[in-house]
Image (cartoon, rainbow, N blue to C red; front, top):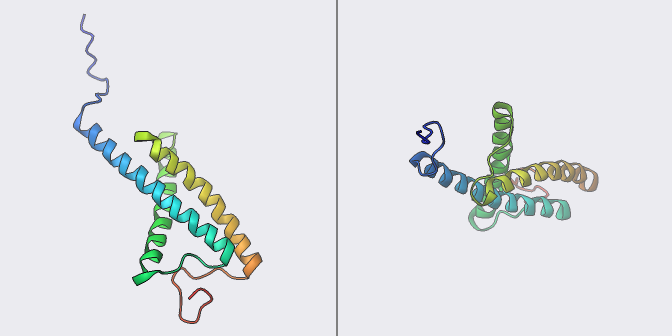
Length: 136
């Protein structure tokens, strides 16, 4: 009797190991982007403006990239859900699953902060500060 099943996934295949690295990187990036986005939403809710641009605009750039990363997680999750019936894989140390879950919470928080921004301050700040703007 041959117990070797050729259809069974192998944990030591090169593509599986490469995939683990990609999932780990995506998970770490997603968690970091979620932290930055969460802090940005907190700052926006409490001050009426997002994070300051910082020296050379680096803080603003990180903030913008983080928002794009969270949006990318949401898009990837929706695509995975549509094509596979489930969301993104948890990934190593469950980091990608954590990032995915936090991204959905941040999407809801973003809607809340956007509505609160209009009610509390009467405006939505520009993504890129303009000369003479409220958040310049």
